[in-house]
Length: 165
Image 1 (spheres, rainbow, N blue to C red):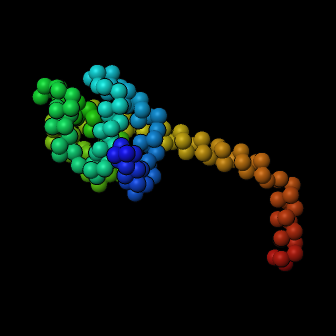
Image 2: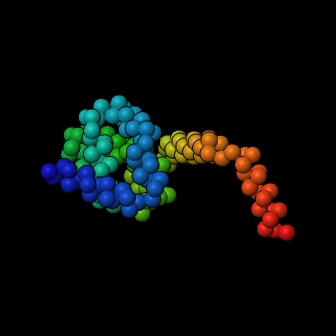
Image 3: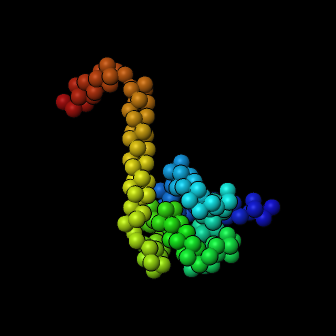
């Protein structure tokens, strides 16, 4: 029951965030980023998804992130710091512009280099562009299915002939 309540709170919180954040958190691209981190650090399955939920519910307050990772995953200080920076850069930097916190500053504050994570920002941007083009393509196809050009021509001609003279 507590887990169900947590997920409901998360979904309510997501609804309050910009649409792009909701898209990103439900996207295949985030899944790839999570998988990459899971493999790189041998993180238990589901841990990062739970972490994203927790951080979302905390309004992306990253102050205790490093300590939480250290305790949860029992990592040494150096590996904890690197993983924390990688989580911020890989999972949250792509949506930095849409969050109330400055993810770039959080990365820099921990000694990370923003440039190391630019490819994740670029991948999200490409995904958004692809999604936009796919939606436009669907819209054009729907328009072609629903609109008869000859009928539209006739209606337009009638409008000009009878009402604009």
